[in-house]
Image (cartoon, rainbow, N blue to C red; front, top):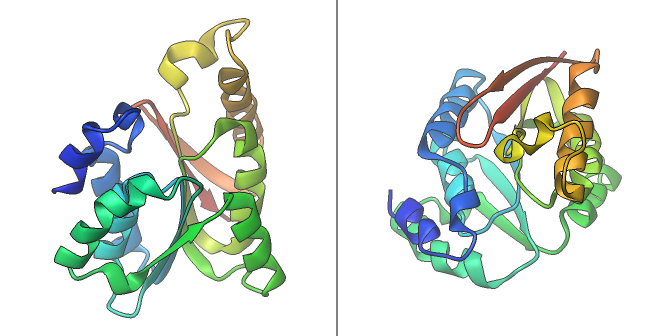
Length: 193
């Protein structure tokens, strides 16, 4: 609860996961009996906490952020919720963490992955997360509507074009079943076959 208002007060706080998205992902994690989750784009830790709350006591959320300041705002709330022990914050580019996990033999061991990080790398995040997910795992990609920019014949910025390209890629990907939901700025759920 407390992480949401805290996040909204921050610059770019309006880009955080909505409470509806968080509730849906937490319930999906419970439904598939998730034990391990990835969270790319920690910000103040709202999504990491939502996932941690849905995991069993021995569950683990690996969350990635390049800016060390926003997660420190949310860390007291992780403690207050008694979930901090489940959250492994990696302060480095998400691609580095994903490559390290793959090199460590963790392919196919994660249940849930959430991608809400820089859009220029979203296709690379998608591919690596898909490798790390087990069959039946859920990959959630946020901001897939990009304020409607992805619908423009010529998106105005690079980020919108990257998101549009990823949307088209996921749509044609035979390795997943998908649902695109108009929650927040768009949420794609890709269920690994």
